[in-house]
Image 1: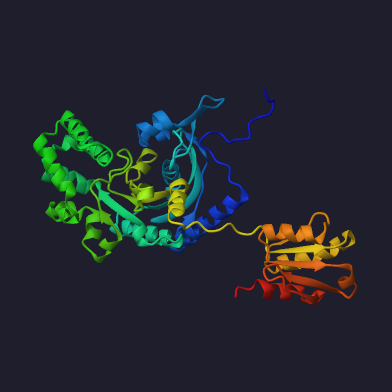
Image 2 (image 1 turned 60 degrees about the vertical axis):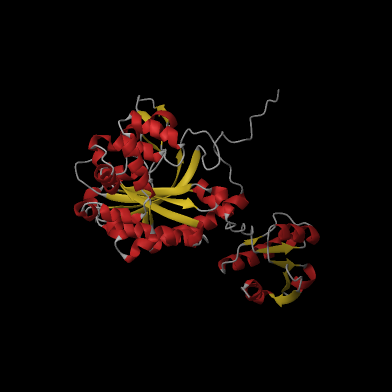
Length: 431
């Protein structure tokens, strides 16, 4: 038996080596840029929270099956955050008197859930959360929809690659009561059946519906309603449509941003109104990528002040599955752009001085930690993705000159020390 500890990470977590981190950073940077162009500012919070905040609103599956919980030395029950929304609601409630509403916030955090690892699901994931607090306006949902499309576009996705589907609890409740004849006290239970609609055979869905009191005739009418497109919204009472941000959006030209889908239900504990999800349209990855909705009551578990909210969370696992499926993953960036290679150890101080000038000019530059044969250094630079090498040789340096080589074309020129930065800059300039 080996006495060494395992080198593999804990099941459901991942190591990210430099090439993969480069790809991730490029993708996330594009997303940050879009979010910040909309005026959202970044925040953060602790990875440890009171377990109670997830038991209050996150739903039984998370609270009872997926929570990584612990008790500290003072017998306080804590949890590794499984999601960020309860944390940001707590932060907003705690600082409400200092904030100017509405606020637009975003974060990028890691979350933990004890799940069975599989495609699209791991036990530690990173997600970008984007939220608006303090507005009941349908313009909040509208901005979310526009932002999602711009974020997807920033990572190279075109509108045919994904669908943004949305529903509204108000509309759904009216559809079930006014069009199907479901009693109001059965709406929540029937909504749970709808949440499983696309995953189970009709016979099983019918059996579940009958078990909670739905008649076969009501079930048939429910099927008819669910197959209808957004025109079904026009059949709902005017006061219902007036109270629904989604219905307001569907009545304008902005309806092209979203597809009405009454089967979008999402967390019944969380969401109070609009709910939405983004789906991959490729059959090879036919699944939900991320989603969100309106959660006007969540801040209320921390304070008496009513602060409405709407937002979404984009997880890294499903996002990168999507990008991989559609061939949209960027190539890893080079380790560095330039290497300054001294041919003798005595020339290392000169090489470091040249490297400082190149870094000051914005070029990612490396200097060998110890001199090696030029052939080996060039081979390593090529593998690292470098585009140029500055060779500091004794004969050239005796004339205060160095050689600059283009690693793509293998062209080389000798330049005075004072012109090195300019020469490298010309070589690296995009054609």
